[in-house]
Image 1 (tube, helix red, strand yellow):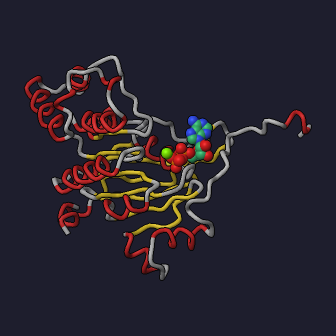
Image 2: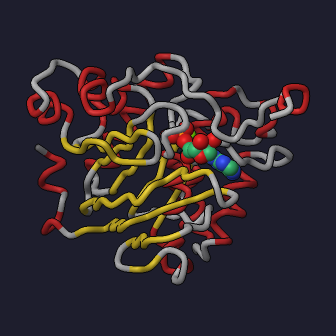
Image 3: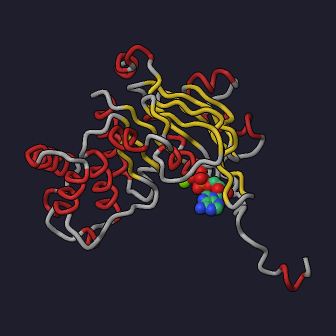
Length: 272
Ligand SMILES: Nc1ncnc2c1ncn2[C@@H]1O[C@H](COP(=O)(O)OP(=O)(O)O)[C@@H](O)[C@H]1O
Ligand SMILES: [Mg+2]
């Protein structure tokens, strides 16, 4: 209910139209995808490995070049107006790209300067976020010494430093223990309650159910269903998201997909 109140005037803050990504001229990772996210919404992309979630979120954050279609953030076309886009977004991506030869505080200082934040604001945000993510104790230690959970939490703290309006998170709790997972969930709920638009990807049904008011289920580069967890279950007359997925795709969520990029190691021997 809180979330609904946040969605100011129903304005679309993310608008994606016919977005497509083809890698190396052959792998169609994202296939003509369209969706919109309203300001203040908590929106999730749910799908198995290889569905195209990372590729989509990376195109939204301008980390991967789109092949076709359009992605707009707060009215700005991502690929053409990236400066305007960067000011508005924060992201913590699947491959945590931290410079491990610096301390948390040093990295936050640098990040703040890159975003032209005044030193007093950097200091205040740093204090707040290190506390929020329970990292004060290790803030002056090299990030290389952090545990996996600490790195994820720090990555999230860093993504929030410049107070972005929109937060992009790619599988934010993968590899975390249940306690750390719950902690991140609580922080994300709080941030969303305060008005931040959050877009996340996950391959965990429970995560999508717990956090996202609206979910797009992705499979093989396409959005195959969209709505709240409960409305989807109702629509397809089933009890769980898992069953929704089975209904809309005809295969189970857990089924491992073969890597579309792998080449046949025996091709030469087999003469194919
Ligand atoms: N850099 C890349 N080059 C070629 N193919 C890629 C690349 N990144 C992803 N893919 C392929 O694109 C498809 C979607 O991948 P991805 O977006 O990572 O899915 P997800 O995040 O849902 O697991 C997969 O078939 C994957 O192998
Ligand atoms: Mg991914």
